[in-house]
Every structure is written in C-alpha cells, then in structure tokens.
Amino acid sequence: MRMITIAKTEWPQGLQKAADRYRLFGPVQDGDFYNFKALDEDTAVDMDFGNTRLSPKSVIYPQSEVLFEYTLDEDSPDQNMLKEPDTDYSPRAIVGVRPCDAASFPLVKLNFDTPEYQDPYWLKAYEATTFIGLACNTPCSTCFCTSAGFGPFDETGLDALVVDDGDSYHVRSITEKGEAFLDAAGWAAAGEDGDAEKRVGRLKEAAEAAIVSTISTENLRDADTMELYQAPFWEEIAFACINCGTCTFVCPTCWCFDIQDENRGLDGQRMRNWDSCMFPLFTLHGSGHNPRGEKVQRVRQRFMHKLKYYVDKYDRGIQCVGCGRCVRACPVNIDIRKVAEYMNRFAKTDTCPAS
Ligand code: SF4
Ligand code: SF4
Image (cartoon, rainbow, N blue to C red; front, side, top):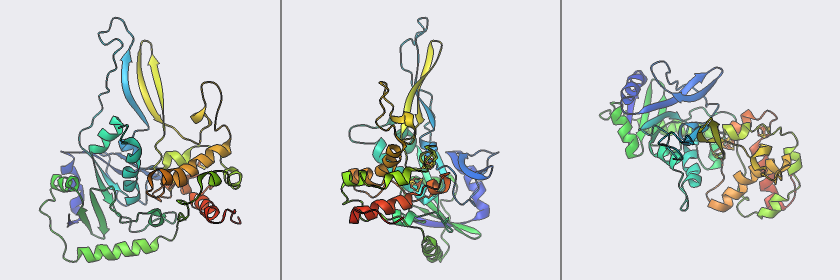
C-alpha cells in the first residue's frame, strides 16, 4: 500500500506503543540460537538475527494445545460437558518474520482451512495475527527460497515488510492489517525517505543474487507418482536417518499432530501435540500393524509428501519454502535439495542420478 521510513532509534518506542493493542512476538536470543518468543519489558526483540532455530509456526499452532476440557465428576455441574479452553485470541503481531516463514502460513492454511473442514483453533489464531516481516539482506548459505517459489524480499503471507537499511528501516504496509499496525506503533503519519524504493530495490537485487543454493523441481509435477514411489534410491537416502524427527519439528510447513487425552482423577483435557511422520509410532495401528514400520517407508513419505503428493494435490509448487532449517538441523546431513535432485532427475529419465 505505501512505504514509510523510520530511524532505527524509533523502533523500540513504536513496538512499545503497539503493545497497547497487540500481544507481540518476535525473534529473541535463546542461548546460542534465536527463537520467536512473547515480548515484554524483560524480553526485547533482536532484529539482527540470521534465522531462528524453530520457525514461528508455534505462535499460531502451539507444540501442545488444549482442545477442550472435561470432567466425569458426578458432583460437578459440568459433568460430561466439553468445555472450551480459555485461549487468548486477542490481536497479536509477530514482528521480524522472515519472508520464507511468512510464506509458510498461507501454504499451511490449505491444510487447516478446506471446503470440508475448518480447524477453529488454527484459524482463530491465524486471523488474530498480524505478520510484520523482515527482509533478508544477507541470506544464509543454506537458503533456497528463490527456487522454492519465494524470495528474500517476498511479501507472501505478510501484512507489512521491514527492510533494514543501515540506520533506518523502510516499512512497506501491504494489507489493512499492516496499516493498522503502523497506526498502533504511532507511525501512521511517517513519510517515505525520497529514494527509499530505489534503495530497497538495490538491497533486494543484492539479496537475491546472494542466494546460490537451489532446489530442482521442474519435472516433479509431471512425474508418475507410483514410479517415483518405487524408485530405487529410497534405501540410499534413508540409510543414515535416525528418525529423530528434527527435520519435521523445525519445518514451518510440517503440520502433523497427534491427539491425546491427559487425565488426572476424574478431570481431563484433550490435547493435540506436534507429531512427526518420521516417528515409528506415527502410523502404528491399535492392532499392532504398522503400514510404515520401516525407516525407508517413513523417509520416503516425508519427501514424497513435500515434493510430490502436495504438488499433485494443490498444483501450487512444493510443500517447502526453502528456509533451509532441515538442511542445517539434520544430525546426519540428509538434505532435501539432494533428495529433490534425485526425484527430479528420476522423473525425467526414470534412472537414478550418479551419487
Ligand atoms: S532430521 Fe535427519 S535424521 Fe532426523 S528424522 Fe529428519 S532426516 Fe532423519
Ligand atoms: S522442508 Fe526444510 S527447507 Fe523446506 S520449509 Fe521445511 S525446514 Fe524449510
């Protein structure tokens, strides 16, 4: 919609003011890493981070979430009633979201908001949230957002985008929500630095040129699903995997969960918790049968889901925004870019690339 320029020294006061209308979340140093946390007077946002260890998906979709509470106590007037938890869906804003992470939310929405089913917990949290992005001036060596269909200054999923330009920030409001945030921060009347657009353009060009890592996807859409499923390279790819699930927990686009009842005496809560297709228990049936009992089946599932089933189902590219987290975090160096190369080349030639 429009761009404003503010001095960096005005940023903390702006956030302080915005905190009157929003619950704020942002990147905060967490030991040797950065993670998204709720901001308060003791927890200040730090905009000088590379990328966070975990994505901000937990702000919308907590790792553990109460769906409802119940009691079987005959003396309680609430006996056998399902009670909604007291979840706070008041306006919240995530500041400092990297464009790759922001792009993951509309992608994940395809799963939580379908014509048949709407997930009320995810949707209420999503709708309450304003996404204030931070463009990547210096992408990491493992970032490959540009070949995943996005980019270091991409605006997908964002309500406003902040661009770091030395002593100042250029802030572009993209939606009404973004404009409302600028207003809440006291920046509604701020003007644009004369050559801000040109400077942002130059920073964007430099950032895009700095991304040298890529993922190959061009043949995946037309590939035969069963042939890819039966390709001979899955054993080789899965060999080193220890099924730790790290790749799925750090991923902004992984959405799987498990539902469990937690009981104490006659009272209980139904919870949903992040789960991972890499865990053997994920598909274990009550009968004891497990359709993905072997490691190779689980590894294949993860990559087929991200790089083929999602592509087939939605025809909107791959289920990956190129943040590179799974590449950095995998303890045995399994790399989605390499797997995509195998799949993409096999799709074209029906032969396994030389490893
Ligand atoms: S992080 Fe690596 S080792 Fe762990 S489950 Fe994922 S691919 Fe396997
Ligand atoms: S698959 Fe890996 S690179 Fe892609 S979005 Fe998930 S964590 Fe990021």
